[in-house]
Length: 505
Image (cartoon, rainbow, N blue to C red):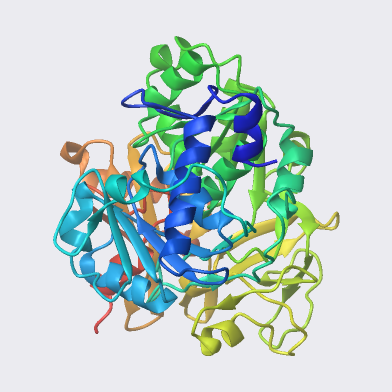
């Protein structure tokens, strides 16, 4: 299935509803808009295997642009609308885009994008850009003759160095072939044409983009939040009778910190499946979500690279608290620095074997760095964890974030999990800072619920709180306070930006 097939049966059904404005994009409009843009791509000389890029906020036509590229057999790169001009230019240049689409509110940031054959702007015009609306208006609403499937080529969010473009194999299969993600989603979460999927995150991120497009293959309605707000999220579930949604743990935490009377006043009974990923969820947070929403919280572990997929259903998680799941795609290996398999319970780098292949576009060195030391074709996302006796995986941290203090490995995620549920903590990052004697010491940077509480008393309280729950060497020696932490809208923390402030350049 794909939007054109849905439009042929239920043309007036909402494909997209914008949560803020209430604007509706029907399946007819989604199909026709994507067909018009596909014809424009062909008129500009783009053929299967060529590349387009777009930088848009959560816009009513975001998914139409993505479907246009997908049905044209193109690689397409959705770019974060929060980037600065030089970051944007780097990605457009690096991916080799022949077409670039943006919106009027991003005109200033997008202005330096010049070496692209087709430049379009939604909702206005600017020097060097053609009006998107005018350009597509003259194109046919019927499909192009050589339709075939394209693929997204998304960039990592740049938590360490320059972002990397993850380039999958381009199948150019018929649009009617659903693909691996469709099969997984259908099997695990049982969506249907009657489903209503609430997407609270930026659509340029891998999971929101891929899941929205997957649900649209079934004819579901997608409700898109322009920006996440915890109470507004609950209101939308009730208003639109949402059945499925995907979140990240920071969203859980923000909703749990709403006043009890606010949490209790919204009818969430329509919600059948709450999916989460992106970052490990602290056990107490997920326990509270299960108590509140019931056993409908599903978790998976995967990456933009698509080299593996682990899944933990509600009952599996309750029986193995803290797990991110058991493998459904790819064989999981936990290895030491030499690439030797470690026994259950021992921490090491997580590799996937027998999964999908990928490359980091234009960067063979980064591609090789993701491979196992023994050259067996196994690949890693850079995470550290361990397997239990039943084959369930537990994440302990990113390899690049591990702290080595006095020769002892410390995984800051443990302290972050503890501190994140403290009632006075809105957000927290834990990492290593220089220490003359020990090499590194543990530092916490905290966004308090109120900056008026920031100070030595709260610092002492948080350190004591952590020490009452973890071995002292794992806990921060000092705590600094910030009004806000540098966190990506998808929930990912830019910890590198914080670390760089404490390490000499």
